[in-house]
Picture (spheres, rainbow, N blue to C red):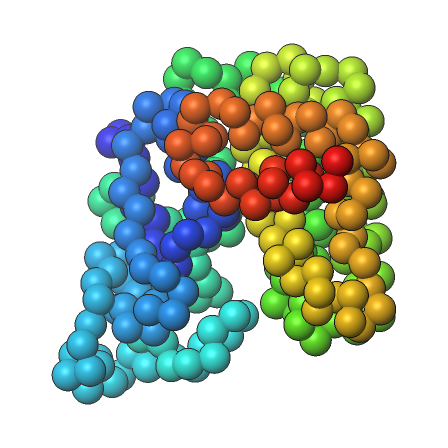
Length: 265
């Protein structure tokens, strides 16, 4: 079976980093296609996505869909795209032959890890693989909540804030406890658990860009005391950010956060 994956998404997107980092480590070929968030409505969502003009949009009128979950404009998604990605979301991934659609970032990450023959990204045996799944599943609430939280930062309310705070504490308490006993999260070697954590938490830290908005509404950054409350997790995040396969994908995304830490110390 041919290895590889094709991914379509808005860019940059830390959720896409997951598969990109894993692919770099395992040497799996992937193709990432996309554009900045504001330009995605000008793309035809398909197994072979392409940018379309206003004239093209008239031709593809039958594929018009109302945007949801972060998109408020009209989107153009082919029937085949919806067949393979029934929830109609991005990132959307496809097998090399374009016949199989894969959605949700951790599932796309798993698709890469299952093609890994040498680095044990999905664990060394079936029990390790199930433990990997346990960590990934435990992070789902955090991932879901921080997506809603980031969308609502400028219009924050007490209910949304407390939901995110609860998910943050539950998730990081587990990660912190795990790192007290192993070099990586859950294991003494790197797995896709570490990759997923790095990408999801890096995205969550974007709340720092809206500190003034939160303060005006009477809220503090949820991650304000991250370095003190979760020192093992903090050290692990920085350690991962220095690994070449991670840093080459994330680029300067975390530079602002590191600078913020330096300024506050």
